[in-house]
Amino acid sequence: MPPTKKPNIDLIFDKAKCIICAGCVGICPDMALDFYGLEWTLDSAKCSACTLCVRACPVGALKLEKQ
Ligand code: SF4
Ligand code: SF4
Image (cartoon, rainbow, N blue to C red; front, side, top):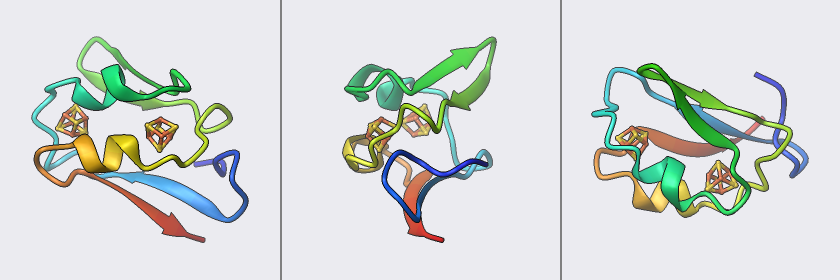
C-alpha cells in the first residue's frame, strides 16, 4: 500500500476484525476512506494520518504504523 501523506506512516487495516460499521469512513476529514460494496478502501494519497479513524474504530481494526 502506498504511504500516507505523512512520510513513513501507513494506515494498516485488519479485515478480519472489521464489522463494516463505516464509522471510520464517516469520521475521516480527508475523505480517504470508502466502501465499494463491502470492500473497505483507503486512498493513501489523501490520508494525513490524523488518527481519528484509528480511535473511532470500535474493534481495533485500524492502526498507524511507521514503515
Ligand atoms: S488517519 Fe485520518 S486521514 Fe487517514 S484515513 Fe484515518 S481518519 Fe482519514
Ligand atoms: S470503524 Fe473499524 S469496524 Fe468500522 S468500518 Fe472502519 S475499520 Fe471497520
